[in-house]
Length: 345
Image (cartoon, rainbow, N blue to C red):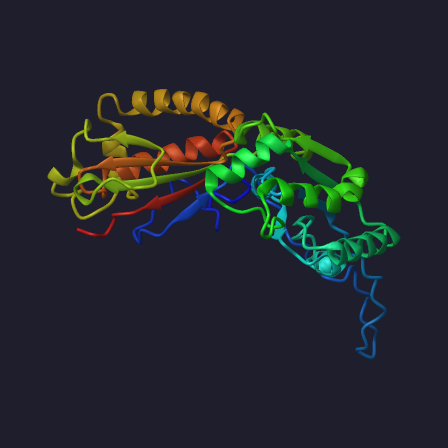
């Protein structure tokens, strides 16, 4: 495991659309904005002067996690995991700016409730600034945790050699010299850490599982799905994780009164799902996806793209994509529907 990053609007699944735009089907209701920004307002007096307004609510202070640790121990993987869990992640933020970041989050009216900041070793002054920032946060009552990623010297050397990168502190010396210097700089921070994770024998999925257990809360980590209809004559989507072939169903293209419309049309959809095997296929494939989704969650996979194809990407695949997305949404999976090739003919 290397220490680098690998890199909507709700709409009803069955709504009739002809523009080919993407839309989102959510399985749960998201947070709604408060109707008044500053609390209750007073009554208007007889002279037209507005009465005293209610006291503005105190801004909610975001929860803060500071991710640090040894270079090569998995900081970027840990940060990506928190990002997938809905945290607002800032990489390599100077420690002196952490209180400012928290203050900005508090002004976001609840849009930034959890902030994760990745800090790495830059020198002794860097950690003096971090110590001062932590003192400021504690004085303001900010709930904060420090997650420290640790690993053995042998594992770190192996990881740096596998990617042929120098250690950031080795200078003209060897990798082990950089590791020793970094351990010395981080010793105090490691002692202050609320969570220490030794990644020496962990793979990426196991590290994700540990982060999920610590930071996902009571909810199971969310899985997000993109259901994409496409036409085989235009090629397979390169980002597809799963591919569904709807060409076993009769093509509405050969029905003159249905040909001008797309699978978003109710008559076209009814025609598709009245064909033998269509409903059974949808039912059984949904059951299969429930099994696959459970495995994806266990393996730390948070995003899946399901490509649904027919000949031209206009009728059968579109209708099937809409129904499949609605089924996934009913199971609590946030689902984006994209009709890649609709309108290309």
